[in-house]
Amino acid sequence: MRVRPSLGTGLLILVGYLVVVFSMWIVTGLDYDEIGDTVDGVREGITFPVGLGAIYLVVVTSVLGWWKPAIHEPRRAGHGWMWAIPGLLLLGAVGNLASTEWGRIDQLGTYVLWLALGCAFVGFSEELATRGLLIVGARGTVHERLVWFISSLCFGLLHVPNVFFGQGGRDTVQQVVFAFLVGTTYYVTRRIGGTLITTMALHGLWDFSTFVQAHSVDGMADKTPAVGGTLMYPAIILGLLAVWRILHSEGDVVEPGGDQAAALAGA
Image 1 (cartoon, rainbow, N blue to C red):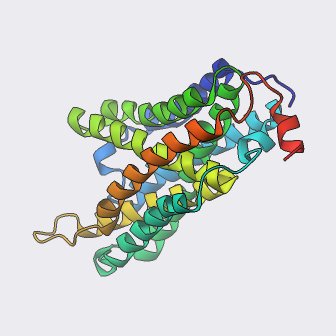
Image 2: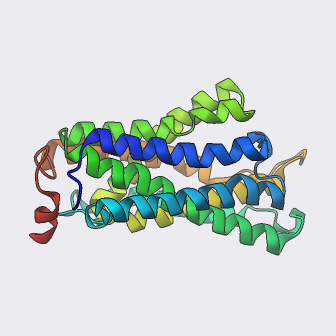
């Protein structure tokens, strides 16, 4: 690790990521409520800006030398029942895809291609920024209880700027709260799986399934319900129970400011 981890550094990286993504939204004049309506909306609102953000994060992570602690946990935590949390989210994503009205999507192949690529970038970038680099930075300064809280809170606050691009205030508040809660399930998934790659894949698949399902039923008088929204609630409840259990039984992954590289080497 070329740069000593600190919470301040993790937060600065996250702010830099937001500047990259939202600068492109400003340039294109994006309307958040129309982001998934068309191929152009997906390409200009998700794929290109988040893809550029991914490049920024790759460069920053490489310069800092934080790849190993950002991607890997020194030790797995938790109990077998906690795998129900990512399991429920995975089932929810599959349910969303099964309830998608594929025949109602214009330019289906092109739309799905750009959305899949964009959501892959979202899963990679948002997880690397909040549950990768921010966790590494936070572990350089604070205890693990705050590491979880700060990373989940920042994941929620990541969505606040949407209100400046056309999303309603109430919808934004709800999105921030749900993102914090879902972020907790992703934190648990990282801890029990031992790797950020699992959360990246799950996050990208979940976003793809919700975007494509919502787009396919937009404007229908009798909309097909999304299965994922139903399964999200038990996943969140189990996630809160799991994070409480992990933080109380496992303690710190490393002491604040401890050598995370050495902890990984000894894993």
